Image 1 (cartoon, rainbow, N blue to C red):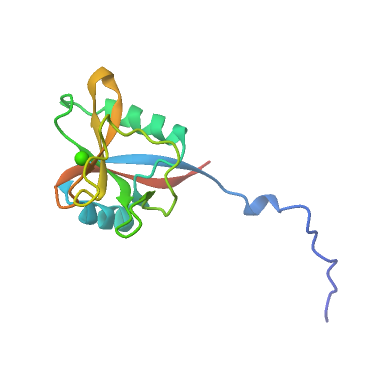
Image 2: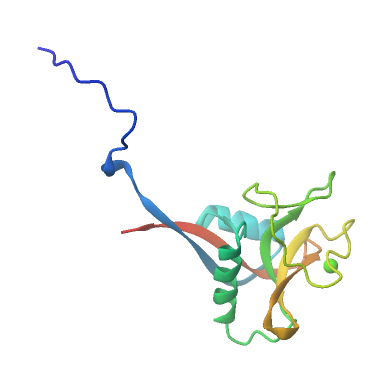
Length: 149
Ligand SMILES: [Ca+2]
């Protein structure tokens, strides 16, 4: 016995299929090279921190402010910020081209050798970006998506 179903509506999405997710940054208090940090984030979370919006930047600032013993300008934190080796533009690890930027004054300073981006607490309490050598070992921030109940 067969039942003929009415055609599925193309204008209404079934509620059951909708999931609300929220992006969340996770601070990793261990030092790794940029590539190792990227690998870690992709294995255990979603991606090395990518800040495609100003909301992302605010969220990251809030997270970094909570970290203790972070002396001004002394310890960098890797972001998922990468310089394209051939075309030399900066992009995010999740493949988004950089929009608004928060480079520190005089940065990026060395497009030939410093191809990865990190954030430091700068003067005035703002977190600003620096290009750095990708082999440096630094703490890092990943992001992941969590389901909102
Ligand atoms: Ca630099």
